[in-house]
Figure (cartoon, rainbow, N blue to C red):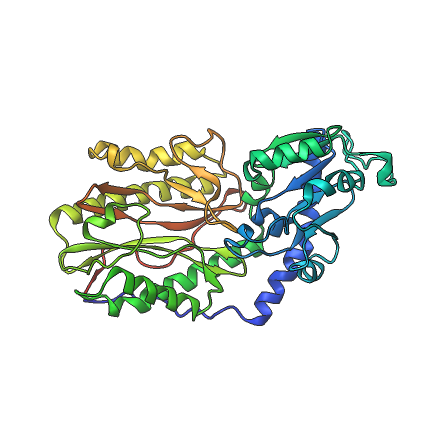
Length: 421
């Protein structure tokens, strides 16, 4: 067995982290300006944000993965014509003041509905032509903002009704994807962090390979892979490690268990690292001992489908074109369908990645028939899954930037058949 050689990846330094933090601070006014342009076009006076990734992107306030479940209303925010308001209870007030020095921090602790009229009255609205509204007045004069955009997908029906009843003079406008569309277009420093996260993951899997042997369990390998990432540059996991062997590899999003690695079977890893808030996502299907003819044939089919999509994207970049989300999915899917595996490739070809593991753009049969944004980063991950028998997926992240004639595979781990154990 010859193990692949991956160049050593240095963990991000303190200077890197400070440089990236400064890049975010410098970028936030531009991000907010683009959102305010959308607000003016849609004729809303303010924007109420709930999604934690959007909070970090626009304000700098950081909640860890899952922390929004216990943070209450902390981290939610308003964008008005001339300021950002961040909500924080006593647990998060100091953090909000430090991470959002240019925002107004308002104390809210389980009483958002009762504070809602006062908060709305304090907002200076964005007018339809994009200019600032009239100056802020005392809240007793009533709300100046008449239409507030709300991230509807992240607000419960009950919370929505409470806010609507708290200030009936203000219309709540359900919106989706406004900030997510901004986040799909990656800034240079965002790309650099995703690339760094890919490097951490690449090196972690390379270090894990000698530990893969018959008898070791999926859960043991998953834990060791997590350790390799977290002790060599990752501040967190992008998501829980998937390590699935043999017939369990047919579960596209299965969780590792007590099943032991067995010779003659596939071993699928789906994992990612997080570096300075940004994530990687990678899947490799390895072979424990020599692959069976069936598994080798499926692997070659999946590899061919991925290569076809990568070549189509490369050609588009060379010509400065922007193919649609669906067309790239079809390029890979058509090969799998022609081989008789249509029903065995049920998910989309890829997804965007950044502050969230899954974000815009989406590549799939049901994805918007629209040109890909650019510059952007997304996964290319075809797969074939035979229920209760075997599964193969190969996933890499790519940078797509036709304007700069730049196309790059950010994942470095080899895609050729790798035999371990």
